[in-house]
Length: 254
Ligand code: F6P
Image (cartoon, rainbow, N blue to C red; front, top):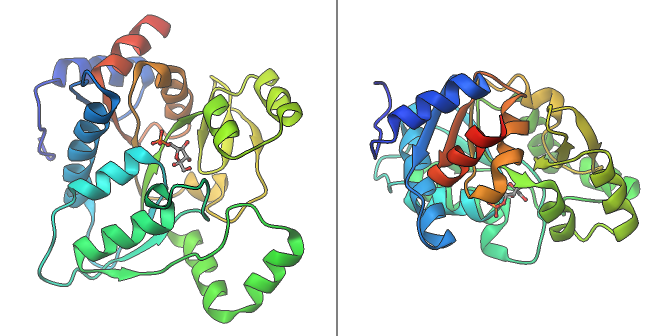
């Protein structure tokens, strides 16, 4: 196979590929602790990521603990790699190490690559956005998000992400009542992959997401099964990295 597979969960991967109709699904071992599971996901996704990137690529990355673990597992390069890393979204949450900016800079360091930061919160007012875009460097960063070659992204549960983003209770229940089960790059989707809510925010749009040539989604844990099913419907050609517990739950649900 083109990719180096770390463990032998291939048959489970093939089963999920058929169930979800997704091109390539890698399944890693689940840990007893969540921290162990995300480490395994990180190692597998890092190895795939390092295989698929090529000269000149513009690479977008999202935040979250899972993608942070991918950045941890990427091997340090001595030679300069001619790629640029950019956070695919503005910042969210309070934990600096899980923010897209931090993760992008970590990956750029490891690859000895160029870094383009997006120093702006994820949700901003219209006025703030205008000021931001009047700066030529910021404008350039924003434009770069429209032509990504690679996207490494995390997948979350809608309820968890609404809470993490501090969305008020009224709005949250409205979104959840619309059937939202997943969140990715600021968009909330139902189980069929229909977008039910999107936060006005700085980052790649759903439209652009649909045309990025190489995308790797990473998520694990039994509680994320529905979120994974939902996001998998968006791009049958994506590479998905999940864990055994999520895989078994997906089999039960689909
Ligand atoms: O906030 C960035 C983000 O990638 C979200 O789009 C996604 O839902 C979430 O993080 C996943 O976070 P975690 O890996 O911590 O579960």
